[in-house]
Each structure stands twice: as structure tokens, then as C-alpha cells.
Image (cartoon, rainbow, N blue to C red; front, side, top):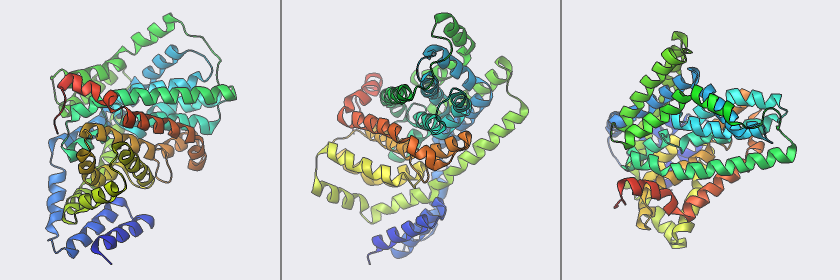
Amino acid sequence: MSDLLLIALVFTVLTVIGVPLFAAVGVATALALFLIDIPYTLLAQTGYTSLTPFPILTIPLFVLAGRLMEVGGMANRLISIATNLVGAYRGSLGLVTVFACMLFAALSGSGPATTAAIGSVTIPAMKREGYSVPFAAAIAASAGALGSVIPPSNLMIIYGLVSETSIPRLFLAGFVPGIVVTVFLLITTYIIARRNNYGGSGERFSWRPFLTAFWSGKWAIGAPVIILGGIYGGAFTPTEAAAVAVFYALFVGLFIYRELTLKKIIESLRFTALMAGLLVLLTPTLAFGQLSAFYDIPAAVETAITAMTDNVVLVLIIIGIFYIIIGTFMESLAQIILFTAVFLPLVQSLGVDPVLFGIFTVMTCEIGFLTPPLGGNLNVAARISGITIEQVSVAVLPFIVAYVLGLLFLIFWPEATLWLPNLVYGEAVF
């Protein structure tokens, strides 16, 4: 048995029997070090260097900012704006959920956080309007995944660090695919709601209630304007923008909306600490990624795939299928760190922009949020709605189709994704 096959077998067995992912990767990495006689100090060195880059701080700061905005009243005001914008039409509350998730995604940077913030309000409301509970949960779960592709995005930050790709360019590249997927989700929601006669009660759209809600929520709308405007205006880096977002959330929650309390702030800090704990995955996965070079894994993968086809569209489709399958049981953070080093050299050799591949990678991770057994968004939506993850998993299938269509849009029309970053920063040379 070859060393590589033995390592893959150990990792697979540990993952299948339920060993925590960071431990499974750590054991596999230690075995790989032993087999090629490299000192185990590589793990310790990688553990230190993986957590020292300054941009890593961006992730817990954006998580904290998003949580403070959620409990400080911004999420409710975004929902109010979306509700008054959509009006009471067929499937309106479902459409409101998708639209509100898109808005909140520009604050939180996290898929599960977006699902929790918006779904906790809109899922009970959809229940009261007679929506099927699994359908309501599926809308919140699928729309919540927009938190990973609409900037700022924690997964984009990780990809940018691993691949040494410009994070501001990644953020800009996420806008068009994010809007396209949002449109597909809106269409899917409307078709299913209309077929089942969900919603349609209440007030129709009129300008006065919408403008009132917009004025009341102007501070919530101002958050992404300040965060993203500051980054692209050159006022601060993404990390500094995350710190600004935290102070903005505290200021608005304490002094404008006055809904933040000491208890809520402490709870937000606790939530952030738990979420930031996922960064422990960086240590073993980065070490494992470095070892892939010793085993010539990228070259082997490139040879295997190009032996089948060198058509860039087909190669991206093959990688996308692989990512979606892996995403059913692997954390998105580990998925990005482990496989970017394997597939990025291949797609770059075929002329794919690293920024485009970053958005492609993040979108496949979004689908992973919606597929059991891991399915982070599914678990959040199931807890909020009080149903099983199996029920949500069935109801979310049409929305997965919407994401797949968005992924195909990105593959077949890459210029649309790269248009905005190229417009602002010029075409990249790689």
C-alpha cells in the first residue's frame, strides 16, 4: 500500500467514525510526517504561523460585528425594510426572507449567522401565514448561505490568505454572483409559494410605509456602505473595516437603537469565541496542505484530470462536483485550506483567474451548507423551526438547484464575475 493511500484511508476512517475534523486531519498529518521522516515540529511551527497573520483577526471581528448588529436591532430593521419593499403578494414573506438575508449578508460574513439572524424572525412569521414549516426553514437556510458569497465573507478571507489572492478583489467579485443567486432564489421561492398558495395577505406595496421603514433602518443600511465603501475608498484595510464594523455596531446598538445591553454584549462575545474556535482547523489543515507538495499531489491531480479533459469548463464542473460531495461532511474552512493548494495550480494552468476560482470555491461551499449530514445552515434552520434536519433537507432541494444554476453562470460567463474587480483595480496578471 502506498504512503498516500494509507494516509487517505486513515483520514477517511477517522472522519467516518466521527472523530473531530481537526483531530482527524492532525492524525493524518502526523502519520504523513512519520512516513517521510519530517520532524513533528512542523505541526507546531505551522500552528504558530497559521494564526499570526494580521488578516486572520478579520474573521472574529466580522462575526462579533454581525452578532452585535443582530441583537442590537439592525436585523429587525432590515427585515422591516424588506417587508415594506416586497409588499403582501403571493409568497411575500418568503421573498422578504431572501431579500433580508441578502442585506444581512453584507453585515455578517457568515452563512449560519445570517440564517439565525433572519430565520429566527421570519420562520415563525411564515408559520403564522400558513407556510409549510419545512419550506419556511428551507428558504431561511438557502438564503442564509448568501452570507458566504456577498461581501464581506469569512470564507473569502480564508481563501485569500491560503492562495495569496487580494481580499478586496475577492469581495468585489462576489457581488454579481451573489445577486444572480439571489434572483434564482427569489424565483424558486415565488414559484413554490404560488403553486401552494402561500402568503398574499396584508398590505400591498406603497411608498410611504417603505420610506418610513427605510428611514428607521438607515443606520442598518449604513453599515455595509461604511464597511465596503471604506475598503474600496482606500480608507482602511479589510481587517480595519472589521474593527470599524464592531464599533459601529456598538455605537448604533447602544446609542441609536438602544437595544444593546451588557448581557447581550457578553453573549455576543461568547458566541464569537465559539465561532472563532473553528480557526483551530487552520493548524493541521495548513500543515497537511504543505505536505501535499512533498507527495506531488497537485501534479498527480493535474495529470489525472487533464488526462480526461483539458477543457476548462469540464474541469471546473468536475472540481465542482468533487467539492459539493466533500462539502456534505467536511467543514468549509478545512475544505478551502486543504484543496485550494491541490486544485488552484491546475486551474491556473488552464487560464482561470484565482479570483474567479475563489468565488467558485465559496459557492460550492454554500451548497455544502445545505447538504446533510453536516449542513450548517440546515441545522440552524431546523433548530429554529422545531423540525428534523431530514425534513429541511428534502425541502431545500429546489434551492440547491438555484445555487447550481448560479455556479453554472459563473463557469460559463466568468467575465461577469471579474468585471467589477477588473473595473476598479484593473485586470490582474497571474
